[in-house]
Image (cartoon, rainbow, N blue to C red):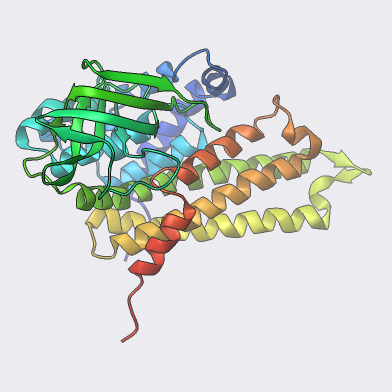
Length: 369
């Protein structure tokens, strides 16, 4: 049995990493962080030229159909570069939702544009600072028109289409809403990671199209979508955690104190060893989750929750302790440590916080007979 990725999958990973090394350096990330651009357009263009948004989209709908294992490795490379693009929102969430639940007409209309990057999507679920209750959503759809508010929509400021969770006559559903539609107003939010153009959205009788042909399926659809997206977000997190660890180790080798590299001090050795162990544990969980995602295995909910929890913990630890290894310099704006710390905190809250996924993990565990 082969537990490794294929040569073709690794080739795409390496090509993605080369593109990001060329176009997504610290300067490109900081341009978005400091508000000079809403996202890294040159990086997004390069990803689209490689066909990466269409990695898991079938060829019949304009994708390259390279599979989810390849997409996992692309996500890992994007996380390692802290890429300021709408890739996760548009690809892991909206494109995947349309592929899974859309009608044939919706797939034919949207997937080719999502695959080539000419259309950017974003998911709008949260309505406040607490986890949303899909049985009591304030955002409602009546006669094909949506009214209400959504909070903290990642990449919502640059999205062309929103996938909105809203109540309807038959219960919660997922609805497609164009950001150009009358009655849609977006307001930018300040978050810990400004590289993810986050907005609140107000809908006032805006045109909304049900995703799929059956209403009232929103809760089940969102649960399935979150399990699948959690695996890809987890790969982004281990990519970022690896970069933070590499940064810490590199600095510990180069920085001298009392005539010796600071990496030789026991306290820092133990700190970086803990970072490494957390990362490798998360990595092994992510690999199992990648298999479950690629095969649509029954174990996916458990595998996704396990990967999500361990990857969140690893990224939080590595990004935080990277700052500690850098000492007083690590807390300054000039050093890049905070780029990973910001992204680790932002990703920890997407799809629900750590406690949400810990509960899912517990609930997914097989009960003792």
